[in-house]
Image 1 (cartoon, rainbow, N blue to C red):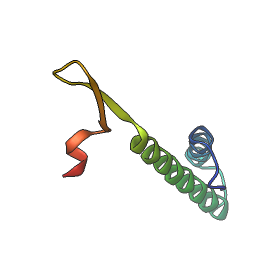
Image 2: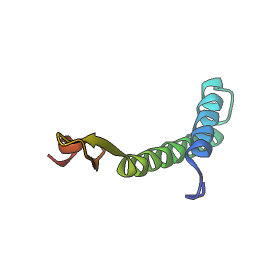
Image 3: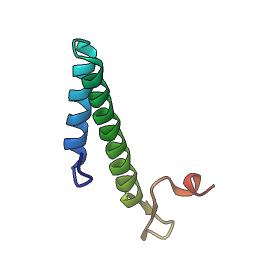
Length: 79
């Protein structure tokens, strides 16, 4: 599974793997390959979500009426 996949592509791949595994009608080797594809899709989704979280900034209005930004999660992520 290529690392360049978008979040949506990785999520679709994961959903398809889960659906195939839930059917339970495939040989063990094929099920293992499908499971591996699902794990890779989940890892790519997690990686993409972490990258997005790192980019999100919360807009804050200061007491003087000006605006500033801080990383998503504020101080909670820094502890």
